[in-house]
Length: 342
Ligand code: NAD
Ligand code: DAU
Image 1 (cartoon, rainbow, N blue to C red):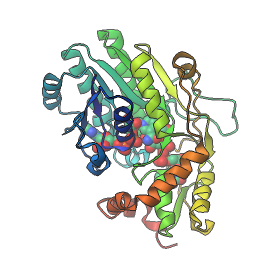
Image 2: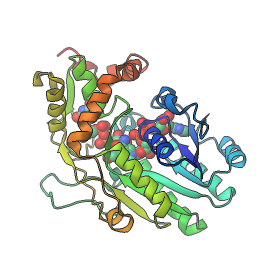
Image 3: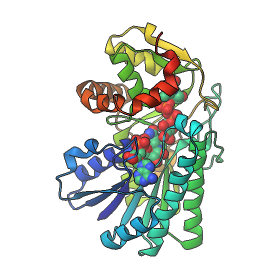
């Protein structure tokens, strides 16, 4: 199988590349990534010499480049992880989210149509469903939950989902969509909650918690997400949406305290800061469909996954220190400048 994976120099895309190369001997992966601030070639270092893997630096919005690549590589399947992914950045700079997340998806699907009706899988997110109230633990997102977005990021992802379903209905393009909950694990960019808190706690810097830290996210270890996507590509029903999540809801503040405890740091480092604009209260995925239809279940318990993740960040300081000492410094100053001197 020749698989084209976009966004493979980012967090989940890279973990997916590792997963597929581990699982399948007879696979060939072409990884396309623009290497934005979130893309990191050093993440892919361990597979660069694998003759089943090839890296191509390219913007998924570059129609000519993408068509040329499809013409040359003739992929059997395309998995689209490439996206602008950070909600806070989408609040200050929505344009690039619309461009990459919507137009990039459009270009990739047009190339799929042009070069033989190629199988296309879109990596979406549970954020397209909006949020759930904190006092209704009985409510969860199913695939039938109406799309009801909050941020420019989630709106761009939802727009792409609608486009993907339109390409199925209009052109009969063989598509599937997966909507996963929050991932955690190695190689996650340190702007996201878990790696940010680990990095700050390690350096005894304040841990910026939005609002009162009571918002709830549903956490899934990244390899479990990769396994689900692999199943959908192989056995998923064309034209269908699959939710992915492991029934692991946690309040942000509890995650932050757990990280501090594991690192042996004081809770005095917790600093409550101004809330995110339009901050979604609670996400909770009902994964019944993928479980019933494809037999998927998560395999990593949160207690084990978070321990493994924290250990990974401790053992791989060089990977994230290079990032936080680079251009990320300027983002951090703008975003959190006022909490630096607690
Ligand atoms: P990430 O920000 O770590 O990585 C995104 C990658 O896409 C980077 O390597 C970046 O260079 C690349 N990219 C960005 N714009 C590009 C463009 N125009 N052309 C080519 N490459 C481009 O993101 P992630 O957390 O790994 O998320 C991957 C996908 O999974 C996204 O589609 C996201 O919406 C979705 N998702 C993420 C989570 C999560 O918890 N992180 C949960 C559910 C769904
Ligand atoms: O649910 C899936 C989504 O999960 C993905 O689609 C997104 O790409 C991914 O970034 C993630 O979105 P969140 O907004 O949930 O993740 P983030 O790590 O930014 O924030 C998690 C929670 O932690 C959220 O309630 C905001 C809070 N938070 C975050 C940061 C960065 C803080 O309290 N302080 C912070 O500094």
